[in-house]
Amino acid sequence: MAPSAISETLPSPLPTKAKSPQPAEDGQVVRAGLEKTPLEAISHGPALSGIPTFPSFHEERKHVLTHMAATFRFFARQGYTEGMSGHISVRDPEFANLMWMNPLGRHFGCLTAGDMICLDIQTGRIAGGNTSRPANAAGYLIHSAVHKRRPHNIHAICHAHTNAGRAWSVFARPLDMLSQDICNFHNAHAVYANYGGIVFASDEGENIADALGENNKGAILMNHGLITVGETVDEAGFMFGLLDRGCQIQLQVEAAAAAGIKKNIISDEEAAYNFTMASEKHALYREAQPDLEYEFMMAGGEEVIGKGFEALQSLAP
Image (cartoon, rainbow, N blue to C red; front, side, top):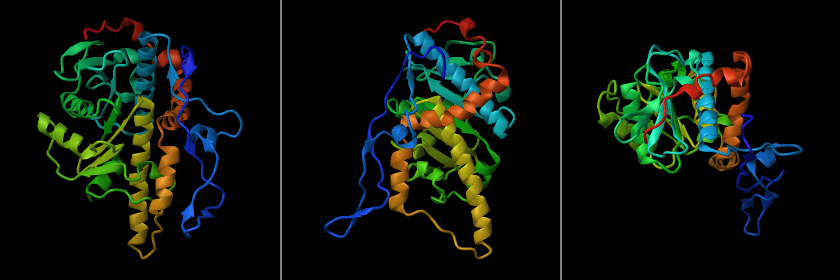
């Protein structure tokens, strides 16, 4: 957690699941329990805090870009790099028409807050940040289309070409709910099954935005890779890792099933309950923190990954 955070936003309460489902008068099973937030439900003792708030946009922007760089370093540690491919974008906390992206051709594992470029979402105009390198043109076309389509519930987008993601994408199939964790994508991920080549025109970005729709948290892009979205870069980054691991697990399970071993898939009822309790924005922000804190520690401190922020070119919204 950044030391500049001054308060924590409290998540909305949700019903917790009873130890045993209680039969209703009509014979249907209903859930009972205390009203708790997802973070309260998972915390034994004082509840973990949610998304932090800040005394100024300057401090919030520093937190966001530092966590963005740490997310890239997590991606590098997971092997999500592929030459110059892959990008993360984050909507600026002060100017909703601007987004921050990584520079083209700099390794994910080297990125700091001071490397990020700020672009106008509508026009692609460079609006500030580090202007020593270009942004990724294909990345701009994809990310701007998604940001424009969902300005109210998407503030961060992650896209990369992972091994498991690309392998599973060739089947153009969604993931089965094979584990508790992957239920974070229950009825909340799509498949874009019309590969359109390297993105050099706006049409493909628009098609990917169409696939994500109004509520999906991620999409499998056939013959291409994966994309996830979130209200924070922390959420989008955690969900990207979860989607990639989900593809890897699905590939392993399909290989075993081909030998005649039965698959046991989580029921829609249980998957929906898991989604409700685990896919809230504060819980997903918190899910990302162990990996980001590890990156801070390995880099020698949060200030190392935040390096260069104060030197970024001023924004011209």
